[in-house]
Amino acid sequence: MNSSFEALGLSEALVRAVTELGYTTPTAIQVQAIPAVLSGGDLLAGAQTGTGKTAGFVLPILQRLSTTQPASTSKSRKPVRVLILVPTRELAAQVEESVREYGKHSKASVCVVYGGVSINPQISALRRGVDIVVATPGRLLDHVGQRTIDLSQVEVLVLDEADRMLDMGFLPDMKRVFALIPKSRQTLLFSATFSDEIRTLAATLLRNPAMVQAAPRNSTVELTTQKIWLVDRGRKAELLAHMITTNQWFQLLIFTRTKHGANRLSEFLNKHGVTAQAIHGNKSQGARTRALNEFKSGELQALVATDIAARGLDIEQLPHVVNFDLPHVPEDYVHRIGRTGRAGATGEAISLVCADDKPLLADIEKLIRRRVPTEIIAGFEPNPSERAEPIVRQRGQGKPDHGSRGRPQRSAPRRDSGQQPQRPNSRPARQENPRQPARQQPAREQPATKSRAQPTRAAESHAAPKHARPSAQPRRATDNTSTVRTNLPGFGQPSHRRGR
Ligand code: AMP
Image 1: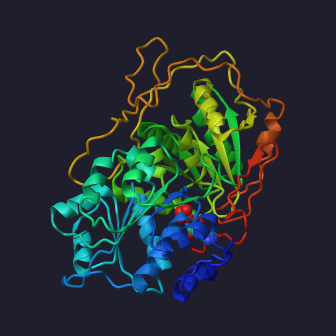
Image 2 (image 1 turned 90 degrees about the horizontal axis):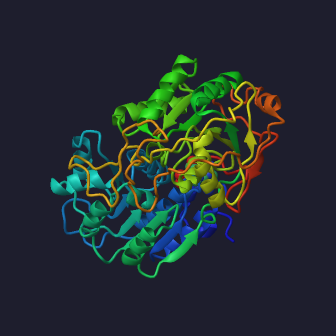
Image 3 (image 1 turned 60 degrees about the horizontal axis):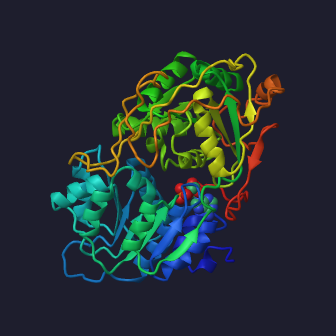
């Protein structure tokens, strides 16, 4: 296996750029994807955020741009040669930043196109001419409608986080985009999961693709310590605030199921001495960017996010991910905990589990094929007689970027009304996605595993402030939890640190 960027056939300018970022060894997905993309063929890649997938496609694309000329130079404006479609604004901004960093010694130009911000600077950038456009589908189609972008000379199409784009209902928009770009092109499809819809999409879009897989499907991320705190439904917020303040944790990414839940939790945390902000699709783009920047700079202790808002966030060496609510879709658990233990750092993923969550936990444990160790924190012992209540399934948290043209027709309707869990005797919610039924079964009474013996020790094991400030300090797995390792060959090496 190649073990250096030079050996993968990348130019000196690109190798220099990644070296300056502190990358010494290509990750598993890079080792597989870079030569495949350089060869000019299509690619189907199974890779989630955190595997180094962005460099896996950006580096060979930059190389292609620097070594070939656009097919037609007849038009006065520089043609858009590469289109990278992504599901969310945050991911768009991150991919653009990566293109700039990896391309800092190359000549390629890039522009990012997403909604929620003024279209005019994007129009000006496009008018000047760019090689690479990173776009969310909605705003891209706004530009198409206003004739401020010409996609007729696109040579490479990348679908990044294709599963999430489908999940967010973008398929109709994506199809409109596909119809506008040349049929003869290179297409690269990246997806963390492979549903039937993704397979169908791949079958229609890709020709004889090389297939690469960064990690076995649905494996949990290397070096992430997973644990469960068993707690009563009504005491989750209190427990979380207590543990954050006691242990002086910084840089927690906390997931809730709903936007409303994210707002409520962030308010609660602020009232209890933890600086937190919610990030979700009802927030303006400015507010989301501000919250993310404050979080990254350490001004905020915690970011409370819905799945879609958090998707693709690249936050350096995130030490703690907390599932305040477990996700309905077990694969989302894998995505969530992929926010920690990234690029060689160890991290901790904690799930707060009450009686209602146990069926969701069972699904997750089935998917990851392991039991997650449980803890009971002293003073927060769950009431064994608490009855499970059904959780109303709500989808569409976070803001799909549909530009200004309204929402596309969805393959499955979604909503986020921020409702409370239903009472057991009330009518169950209408099933929103036939493939993922609403949960209405009472939970099993007993947790999968239980380590009641260690309550205080469990709390004490966190007592030394591991992150008095968000500076990157080495993290160690805590005592009575299991550290999950997978065979992600590119990671787990200390040299794999992000250099920015
Ligand atoms: P991605 O999966 O593309 O979002 O990348 C995840 C993180 O890994 C980002 O912070 C990258 O900067 C970092 N990264 C990507 N490739 C490497 C590498 N070869 N060595 C170290 N870090 C990397």
